[in-house]
Image: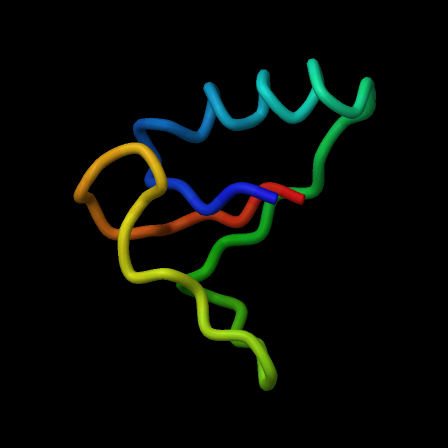
Length: 55
């Protein structure tokens, strides 16, 4: 699972495919809210706002 900004989305998808040999699901964190999980405020790779969940 990766939480990234728009700039790092493609890199996270590539990393997911390399690791799991399957296409990930992409969740837009601006449109989806989770009741029992609060996403990180920042991208895993930079200081930009986290926008996508790659699972």
